[in-house]
Structures are given as C-alpha cells and as structure tokens.
Amino acid sequence: MAYKIEITKAERSRVNDVDFDNIPFGRTFSDHMFVADYQNGSWTNPRIVPFGYFQMHPSSLVLHYGQAIFEGMKASKSIDGKPLFFRPEMHAKRFNTSAQRMCMPDFPEDLFVQALHELVAIDQEWIPAKEGSALYIRPYMFANGEFIGVQPSDTYQMIIFTGPVGPYYPKPVRLLVADEFVRAVPGGVGEAKTAGNYAASLLPAKLAKEQGFDQVLWMDAFEFKYIQEAGTMNIFFVIDGTVVTPATDGAILKGITRDTILRILRNKGYKVEERPLTIDEVITAQGEGKLSEVFGTGTAAVVAHVADFTHKGVTYGLPPVAEREIGELVKNEINGLRAGTIEDENGWVVPVEALTPVHSR
Image 1 (cartoon, rainbow, N blue to C red):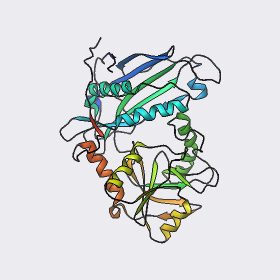
Image 2 (cartoon, rainbow, N blue to C red):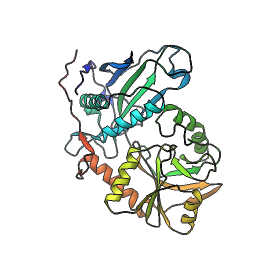
Image 3 (cartoon, helix red, strand yellow):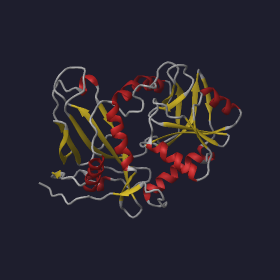
Image 4 (cartoon, rainbow, N blue to C red):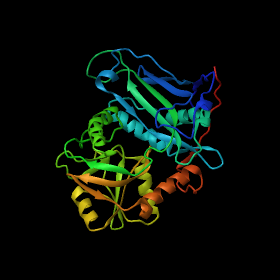
C-alpha cells in the first residue's frame, strides 16, 4: 500500500554550510522532517516539511509521564554514490514493539518504511561519503494529549528527522562495571527504546566519566553478577575462541546490529553462544589469557572495541585492537555491506527511492 505524503520543501538547503570532514555527533540536522498525527484512533496527515521547531501544550503528557519512544538507524552511500538503508523493516517492527510496551499506538510499518524512503530521497545530499560516517535517522513518537492524568494519551505525534554523523566512538572505550545503579530489570522496559531508560542512565554514566571511563557495563539488578549491556550498546565477549553475548531476557534491548552480527558469525562458522554471562567468568577468562576481545555493538557505534574494564577497583586490560579478529571482521562486514563493496546475500541492504510520485505543494 502506498500512502499519499504531502511534501513542502525548504526554500534553501543548508547542506553547503556543513563541514562534512568535521561533524559532531547529533548536532547537525538535515533540511526536512517527516511528521504524522494520531487522532481519533488513526494516523493522519503524513507530511514532509522543512526541519524546524514545533509548539507543545504545557500539559502535553510526554512532559509529565514520559510516553516517548524512538529508533536509531542509518543511511549510507554505496561506492557508486547510491543511498542505501540497512534492514529498515526491522526498525519499523522494533518501533512498534516499543510502542506496545509503552501503551502507544502501532505505527503502520509500510508507512514507516515509505516515509524513510521519501525523506532520505529528498535529503540524500546530506549523506556523508567519508568512511565511518553516515546519515543518522531518528524516528520517534511522543504523547501530546493535553491533560494531566496518569493514563495513556489519546493523541500522539510521530516524527522522523535526520542528520550527518561521524564515528560515535573514535577510539576503544573504557568501561566501569556497575555496582550500585542498574539499567533495567526483567518485567520492566529494558527491551523498549523508551526515553526514560536513557534518562535513568545519565547519572551513572556521568559519574563513570568523572572517573575517566567512557561508559558503564551494566549488571543485573538482583546480584550485580550477570552482564547486561555496555552503556547504550549490546556487548560481546570472545572467550577461548567462542563469541558470547548475554541472552535477551526482557531487560536487554534486542539490537538489530546485535542480530546482524550473530547471523554473520554463524554464517561464517564461528561458535556463538547467547546465554547468561557473569562478570566473574569474564574476569577468570581474562586472568587465564582466554579473553581475546570485548566489543559493544549498536546502530550508532556499529562496533566499539573495549580497551579495558574496571570491577571493584581492579582494571582488566585487553589485547590491542590490531590483534583482534572478530570485532574487526564484523565491523568491516557491516560497513562493506553499507558501502556496497560486499555482496548482500540476505536482502539487508535496501536502495533508497521515493516509492510514489508525490508533488510539492
């Protein structure tokens, strides 16, 4: 099904004002954004408009009770200059998984994907060509019901905007193992990409950075024993040649990059385990010389190597990145797929194209 998306183009593009060799992450935004409204039980008025501010009522429910979700994804360019998405339909599905957990309406997945195509087709000149850079895409939905009451809103707005970005972590990261704060618990909202998850992580991340670390390695909420995630990333360990990542248990985000890496490694014959993993097992493996790699994964970072981690005041180092095989392999594989230099055998790479001829008004 093709939707009619009204398009109002910006009078002047700002793309020539941007230094694409020096892009701070998340501070530069493209010319247009997609907007749709949920009213009277259905999504209406899908449109693309110039990027800009919008008004909100002071009682908008998102400001008081936090009904807000988002996705993070990227568009890149192939070596011949064609704009590409990577597994966009998975982001549409996960967006709705988050919406369901936060008692928000599903957004039509075909409209989600069409909106991505229309928006990025218009702003494709904003996609950086430099390796490691991309056009970051931020779809999000929030409650804008104009009343005070702890209950789901009756109106919502869904927006997608984009912006060029460079590498999220330009160097290997240092992790502080959590021993006081927690990110999520089974039965909570850890699997949802909801704003409150990230707000709750800000203080422990700030405290960790004040001690010289880049992020927190989150533990379970009951024993501070089982590993969950690293900052805003899923986490992988290579122990005695086996790639191990914590099993999703309701408290761990089902990352699309995580799923991609698991599929790549299994297809290449690596031994991979998704299971509960304790910090003690990791420390023992490091002491025995069996821990060869640790890396975080996510849309923003793709693969972020871990330089070391600190637990109860003791720092445990890892081999130099130059000696690591698996993290670099999957990073190069994903970047190669996004650049069109590696053959896509899974249908993950989707060329960007406007799906319907929509005229500006």
